[in-house]
Image (cartoon, rainbow, N blue to C red; front, side, top):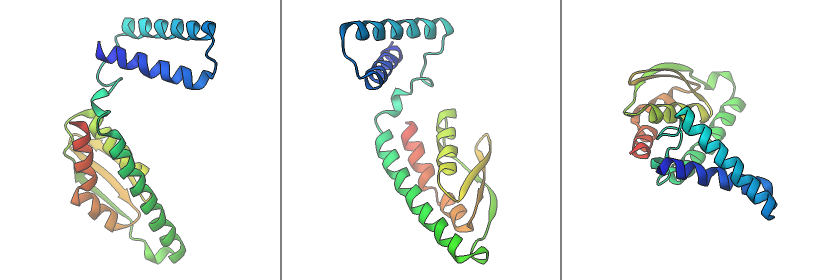
Length: 156
């Protein structure tokens, strides 16, 4: 039930932000369309903890803030190495262990690595992630596990 309420609130906020009109007719049509979507979603049995991950809501904004900071720092490093030329890079491909327990946690971790410039998550098998990095030190920082720890905290 809480996932249905979360879906309703998410759709209602999305509708209101995109509509910009608050007349009774528009609000009624918005409510009717949201109700129809909820009925369809329940008949398809797709409203669950993965489609509406409300357990992530508590920590997600702190994680987003940290991730954006990491993305900006990685952009600066990548631009620096572009200016320095080809001899300054040390490409690496390595498998690293991950500690996430849920599929969603593993996907968040892999996507966070890919969002960070200079690194790409290539393959995810069980508890191993294959990562390609422009600089070997990026692989070393992933092995230290700061991002892994933050994603693991996020999924709890």
